[in-house]
Length: 307
Length: 264
Image (cartoon, each protein chain N blue to C red):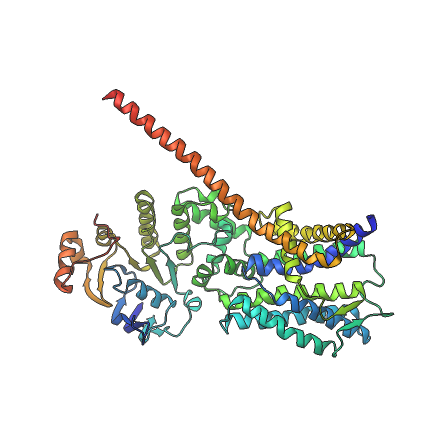
């Protein structure tokens, strides 16, 4: 039990990178980017091929990051310059990446990294991983508070405004989507190394897992500002892995049931706030109406007395 | 300063809804001009604003600033010279970002947006001083999200953001129309004082006839994609709303029909 939770936390740190990528597209740019399902495997594939061919695992991870950036840039270009609907550009890129990933993995759907060094070989993950995530968080928060980062955030918040203030929103979108997929691919590379293999299908459903992490994080830990939100996303990714680990221990649940559990988490998290907001609104409107009309009729009565 | 030369714009070309929005328009804004622009629904006022700011490209004719043709430049490149306030108070600010972040974005107008921190102590001090001039207490709420502000407060902030870097041209697109009378009056007063202090060359669309006469040094009237009247400062001083409406009816042959028109 404990060991499975500890394993889940460790995995959570790695998935947090992917979740931060999804946070950039989904929350900051307001762009649901399905490229993620492809670019995750791109990262894993690049790392596995390079490492099993004797390249330095650190270098392999950096190349994987760059591969994700390239994939994201393609999606961004399709959407902004090609004027293709956002969802569709992501889907197109996801499909295209399947073939590209197969090429990267030299036609093999599964590459194992047996008896080779990975980034995890000679480190203590409990020290290195938290430090690494903190560095990523610091870098990301620094970037999102620069002039360029502000323009990127405004692109998702009010693109008309930031254009009128002189930012090219096509560029900011491409930068954001690239960066997001770079993080996703890096997560793919690290998870492949941690598990010892890369699989052509390892990215399937990644976007929903990323969304689940973002939503769980925000729901539990809040998202008052960017710093707060990014930390919440990391914690959300960890909580998600713990939930998964515990769910796997329930005897009547199969491993394949995970996807529907994830989908249900996301559905509930998306529907619940809207419904509860509209209920609250209705209640407030009723209460205020009662108060205001009450005051008015009282006022009118007072007037009558004077007359 | 700003020259609009034989500009035409056709909407929905080749469809049954085809419509000439602008028909060979010529306008010349001299430095320091403050022009109020009025006209019926569909006269082409908003189209003209969109063509100047670069949201739309003209089908014929040129837009020039300081003698340079800018018609081919996209909106984000023209923003170096042009500040704009929209009618919708929500349009000019980013709701999920703080007041100081919004101001920092306005401050970066016309500059390359790089990897420098957007908010520093020195900048924050400057933001606070600028906000103080609005006189609505925003200087004490630098880190509040803009989405928490009222429509009037957001529009005041939009106005400050549009004029922050002293643009060559200020476009005001019915920027008080969506506010209640008291707030509209506040924004009008702020507009007047900012335009005067910074000596901004301004083009303001308005539905308020009295405001159109009272503000600025020139009044332009549009109808059916054309400029039908250009009134100078001298004549504007003695003009009344009745005269203005009469003039419109005389030239255009129909009454000024503007469903949001405000007479006084």
